[in-house]
Amino acid sequence: MLKFAKFRRECVAEFRRVVWPARTQVHTAVKVVLVSTVVMALFLGLIDALFVALLSFFF
Image 1 (cartoon, rainbow, N blue to C red):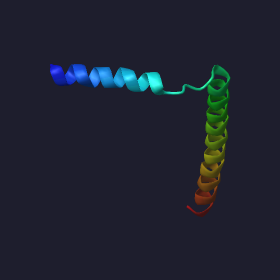
Image 2 (tube, helix red, strand yellow):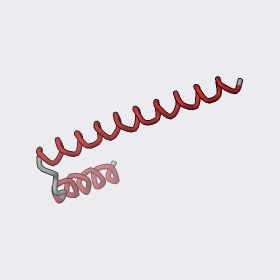
Image 3 (tube, helix red, strand yellow):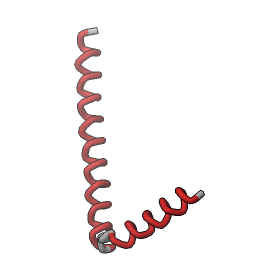
C-alpha cells in the first residue's frame, strides 16, 4: 500500500507541473484531426473505387 500511495503522490505532483494547452489550441487541433481524417477517408475511398473499377475491367 505504501508503494501505491507514493506512486499516487508522484502522479499528482507531475500533473501539477504539466503545462496544459489553451482551449483554443485544443479546438484547433481537433479541427485539424477531423479534417485530415475526412480528407484521407475520401482519398482512400476514391483509390478503392478506382481499383475496383480497374479490376472489374480485367476480370
